[in-house]
Image 1 (tube, rainbow, N blue to C red):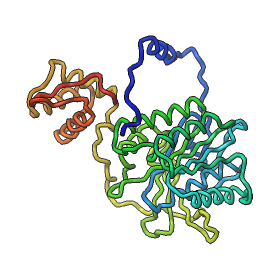
Image 2: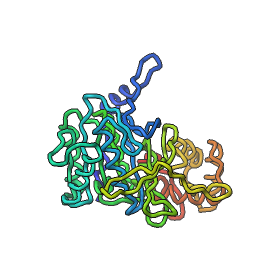
Image 3: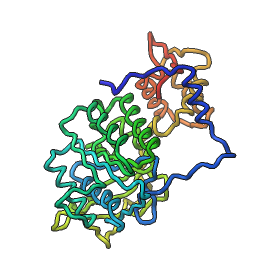
Image 4: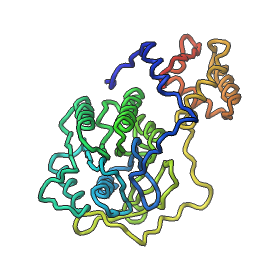
Length: 356
């Protein structure tokens, strides 16, 4: 089931949106405030969102507890520190996976890490347990909470995958990531979310994982140390700021994450680093696709697969994307899967009004 159907925008609304989107070098625009740090590195600003990814049992929620605790206290927790303005000190934590009992344990852990009493509720921390709800209900609840919580600065969604039905739906992925961007921009908050990695590789799961990698200002990987499964390592895999040094923690006798101060990252393999496989969605921008496809299909539809591959190599090459045969094959598959190009009666036709 799709999150929503695509809706046409009337001309008057489109013109209004266009006019509001024009930038000027003569205007002064406020720089987004840095609010979440790892050491001296910014991982989160107001008006943006970030993410943590990792496989099951990698201690993602323990790491998340430390990040939230840092926003409740003036002291660093693990390597995290927070600098929210006075009118942005409230936190909304949304858990979509765990029972109310386990959610309460997470809430108590956050309070202990922040040095706050766990015997009564902390007014700055609102914790929602949404395991029992449907994706529509979860989305509506989060939307209402964000809109009606005063002085909100930080939102955590532990389980963004559960706000949609199909993790492999491009439409649902685009819609929910657009919602994250809308919430953060309209309310000038920072939002951090969590997504599992695929079991078979290191990629975030589904189309929503691809969209997270493309749109988040920081994506952190939490994984077990390769030589000691009791140690979890945190590093940046995508970051707009400078990269921070990976750090590690273990769970101590009080069931709290504890920083390993003398941790040394596992030495990588000798030789060239492994390169991620070619991804036409990740490695080529929408604007480049449109420019190249205008050239590829300049003379109309294309007959035969052989002619298509030749046209793709030529058209994308003319806009600076030098592809080999295998990449052109992957590109052709991507274009068909996204319905940017359709095959009918052995003829390939371009659909320039495609929804990216």
